[in-house]
Length: 316
Image 1 (cartoon, rainbow, N blue to C red):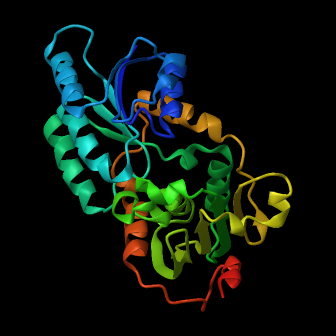
Image 2: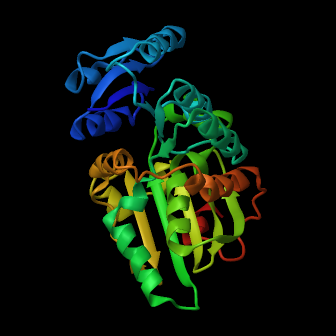
């Protein structure tokens, strides 16, 4: 049984990590979050120590590190706000634990280089949650692209709308310096997926960007991709709204819809299984996606022209 600590216990994604720790037969020893709304811990690890002050959490982890025997922390799961991931991964490694970090790994690719240095000096490893790489439908699509071995390029449309209320823009998620903006916060795992399936990125064009919506064009070795991301409910198609849905997720490849909406609940469990088996995704696997979203964040939109996503017609 491995012993875990968790940073960001009150966050939206933290319960999936708690569930994955429990499902893989391991134990959560300690958790930290400045917010004390963490009653969900009782459903998984009621005996876990909990801290709302990082200094006390740091002292507790250090005490466990210095003690001999079974209390050493093996893994530290990081579910904190995006801009804190880099610092918290460094803390995990220096505390003698391997890190398991939520997406996005970091906001800028040069942070990866510093983490690689700390991995070398500590002998510990950063593992990342790139859940779409283990989704059966995505794995099947990757194999299809590989087996066809075509010299041509697929035409891909990626659309993801996940409606958020006014609270979103008042939280850290609405602050680009903390979240990285829309493309980073809700899109980075999709951009990683595209690189995973279609190869190296060759072109990156931004057409449209606001606090709530971003859209552009990406060209990979084996695909031309029009993408659209938004937290604005007005973009959810009417047929989805009629079913009471506030989220719309679609990937088409040469006009054919790739069904991958199901199975997301189990992807963290599968990711943890792979990490514990020594098959987790490390720092370098994240580099292309982080470079992609960083370039999008710093680009100037060219407007609705060229090879743009069809949803952009509603912005004219």
